[in-house]
Image 1 (cartoon, one colour):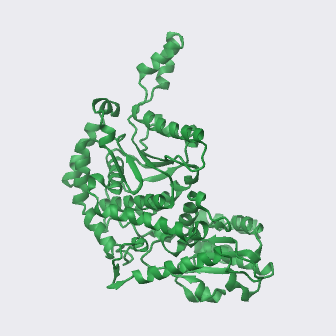
Image 2: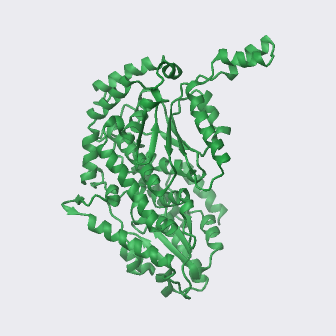
Image 3: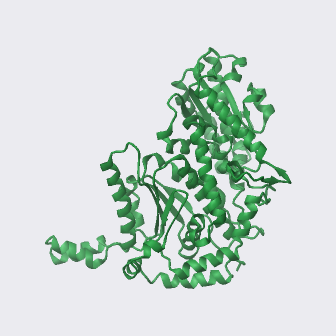
Length: 547
């Protein structure tokens, strides 16, 4: 056994789980009319009702003890202080510095990084203003109104999904198009409808060598030159977010149009950096700054709120409870707001790339489960498909339901129907429907005894399925910033408990490395193949098809 699984709290939680599995939430609600009130907390514009979980006060106390034994608070403070907590890459983890409005310095190797951060924010602000005012013009003097944002992973998902979520705040004079997939169909479709004289390409790659991003940018450059632009015009129409200034200037970009990146910002946490430039171009700098300040508010809450009122801590501990003591392998996110439909995909990368690990900090293999599969879809669509499995399937799938209480300019009937479905689903998951209740319903419909007995079994739902409900007044930039930071810190807490490094991604790096090796053999068609027989066969088939 590892230190974690042999700890006092772990052993206590194991015993508590066996007790809880024999109990039902509907009985708890019946016995305690104030259960919902007791297990509801709010901060930063977000209210969390976690009363529909398989928890008691004793369970929560044991989970908090587990967090204390795992030194979560000390690890949290180390992250905010700039300690080298990404130990495999010898880096600090300071995406929180990018939204630090405290006025206090943040040190890395004894150097305050805040002057650099603030200078970058000012540069973003000035750049966005120049585009939105029509002052930044292309080769023919036309304003740049079409933005093509090229990235991959966090450089794509963060800006795209935040921009989609904040559609009510879009600046009307500019349209931002996002490209990530190296599949040529994507960028060709985007470029086909654009005027090169009005197009600005934003390339986001820290190294300027990310395979997909570089190829898409080269394709955009070829399109631009073929349409009538010159190499000299590249400086007006292409900019980069990158730390490789030489590569960007060799490409033709003006050095003044290169925005910085830092090693202490991981890709999946980078929307707070200049990677977020496309968001600012989409919604305006004022709203982008509100997004940052919302995240900062959650940072402050995470650092100061006691465990029993701390939103990231509560969500994280509930996740550990189900993953490690109930065998849950996935967690579903269900936003009941169309513009948030991409949010599950954002958290999917954040969580699975961070905690999808099996090696603890002491280089030992874990003897416990770590990061879950994150998935989800917008409500109410999922109710007509995968909710069936959550209600009556054989696996436990904890769920986070999300709903804004108000949606500006939304039809009130639509929104009431949406909310009724959201609340009804959490109720149904919790209470289920007993065999006796099903029989009574069927008997009232006049079914004969044999049919009633047979059908009632199929209609029975066990309930006792856990869910959280997160409510917001509305999804404005500040609330969205707080929500993203909430999930970032949830992931951090779980990684701290499991003892994994939540800030490297060696599995991703291996995929890139092998992909480049295969690409070389696809391009150099006469090169000898030395992979496994399956990979060799696949490469040969591709070569033959593209001879």
